[in-house]
Structures are given as structure tokens and as C-alpha cells.
Length: 243
View 1 (tube, rainbow, N blue to C red):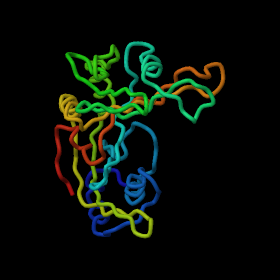
View 2 (view 1 turned 135 degrees about the horizontal axis):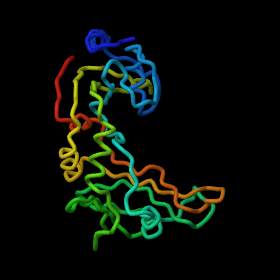
View 3 (view 1 turned 90 degrees about the vertical axis):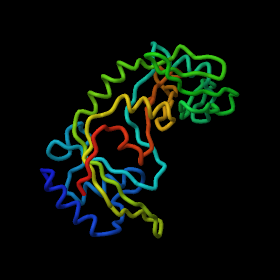
View 4 (view 1 turned 180 degrees about the horizontal axis):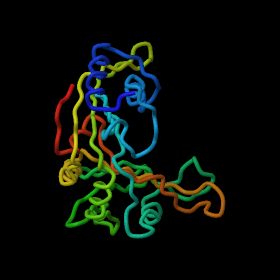
């Protein structure tokens, strides 16, 4: 198992020279699992660094898939219920007529919400990030300063960020790990700029409880701020190639 940055650089160069490596797990997390296994890093779901003082991140260069940066429900209290009841739609996943809303919004263009006739987008105004329809800004928002504090708390570690090419031969994904960077200092102002450019998305995942005493009531499945895998490195001020 690697414990230092020098260990990582040494092992990464060996991995790069291996060329195409079959994935160790199917699906979006396959790239991270494959890299961790090759480096001898034991998989965990903790916020602690993966080795030394570094957290390991990886991305497919040719992928349009998105990664969740952070999940946070909008304000004020019961904002999710308001959105679900006003803009939601019935779903076959439930055996009642209560509404749900699952949609990915951006700040550049309006996104149609299923077959409701509504369209929504994200809009930055003053010290808040709002959700707006085509006619008005709703009183549903995220406070920029509280987001800044939350993001800075989450991204305190230094990161080693690895890029890989990806291909599918015989339905088995393969990776060629080609470059690695140290990235640090989460750039919150850059985050806001990326949001306004439409490179960061807000994923509404508002459903309802299936059963129990809360059946039919609003269930937030994790409203997330997301970014395309290949753009993740843009969230940091400092970038230094190490491999």
C-alpha cells in the first residue's frame, strides 16, 4: 500500500506503462476502484485521505458522466415540498397520485419538467442561488455564504487527480491511466463562475416516502450540485502535474 506522494508517483508510472487495464468493477465507479486496487489502497467511504495527506480522484477524459460535488437541500424550510407540489408530476414508481420531481437544472437554459409544461433553471442573484421559472424567480434558494462554508469544510484535503482514457472492448470497459496532478485550494468563486457558465448542474431528486407514518410526504433523495467528470479539476485553484 502506498503511504507517500513519492510512492504514488512511482506506482502510477508503472500503471501508466501497463496500457489498457480491464475495469475491476462495472459502472461509473469502476475507474476509481481499478486505480485504488492497482495502488493497493483499501476502499472506504470515509472523508479521511486515501494516502498520506491526499485524497485520490479519477476521471475519464472522454466521459460525459457527472459527479456529485455536494448535496444540500434548498431553503427555506419545506422548499422541497413547495417544488414537488407546484412543479412535480405523478410517477409509476408510487401507488398514489402524489407528485415527484427529478430534473437536472443549469443556469444557462430552461429545462422542461417532464410533461408538466413548466421549465426551470438556476439563477444567481445577489448573495443567493435561486430556482426560477420562465416568468419569475421562486423564493427557493441556497445562500452563497453557507454554501462556501460547507464546501470549504468538505474540500480540506489535498487531492491527487488522475485522468484516464476509456474504451469498451467486448463490453468490458478498459482504462489507460495517462496523467496525474496535485490539486488543492477549492475555488469557491470559480465554482460560482462554472455554475453561471452552465458547467455545474443542480440535480433535483425530490420524491416521497413509500410507506410508514411519512408515506406520501416529501423525501429529499439528495439535491446535488454536480459537474461533468472531465471538468472536476476546474474546481481547484492550484494544479501541478506530477505524472
